Image (cartoon, rainbow, N blue to C red; front, side, top):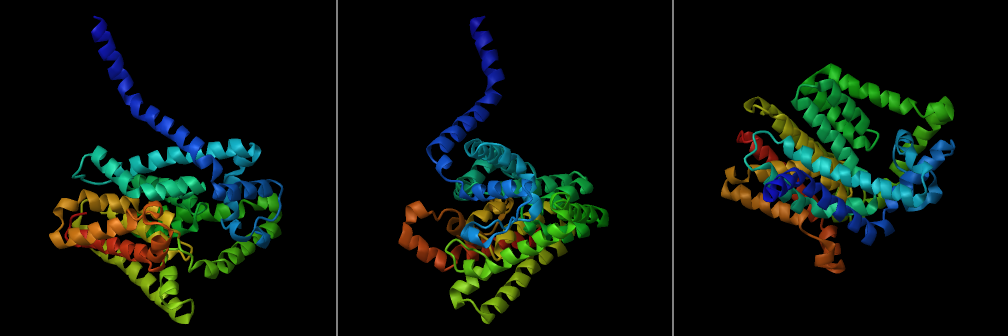
Length: 385
């Protein structure tokens, strides 16, 4: 009888084991490492404090740590300004860690016609993307929030909830404006109403800070946001962690007209890959995942300030390639495996400062990401995803 009771108790507690282990891991990670970092979160919290006091958000004197997000984001994180600095940091880390779990879970669930088990796909994805997740948490960044909103929009689109998908994409724009790249895709695949929902939310979000700053003050904020983003782009292009197409050409050729023109051409080519995938969508029963994953993969490449950790957005693309791995030809397996290894498994702490700096100066991560984009299109043309 006692053994039966214990067996039943263990059966009931089993679903709690993984969440408890994750919670313990999060606490230990925060206490030993993260609490002394999270510099980017400090930028968010400072902007939230300024927003609540109707002070200027964009200040040159902030140097490298200028706030570069749309004004509405400062109000979205306003609750952190009402806490002590340490409490706010702990809360943001806990929120981000939960988003990491959600992001991975949703990315796996959304994979259509999975060949691998969800558990296998989940852990392979975590292993491959670990360095990007770790950097995200250490900086206290917001890309996990962006990724969760976007994958949530994908899930909504998959279950025929286009208005919800449009609303989530509209909200994502205020985390990072990169999300605007999904509005045309939404209009083409889900209709004008879905895309109009995104646009309406963006318009409301752009206007909302006027409630605090007034119309003129809000227009000044938006102008200063644009100035801050454009003025800070050129100095960051040759930064070691910049993996954008603009950064790649600037590192190879030096900043200038030629690099700018080649950036435009290569960006058009990258978007052309999305168009190629879209052309063959009628061959697939569920074509959304690959197209969405491809766009998420391209975001840090298209943005001039695309830092390497933003590649965590490539998670759906990576999962798609891993899931269809056994159906690729030997040649494409080699291409994909090499690109995954170079993009995901090259770690500063293992390679060392000198070798890693040379590796990043050659923009090998950018080239690898482009190779993965081509691999995704190959899957589509073979009607595998």
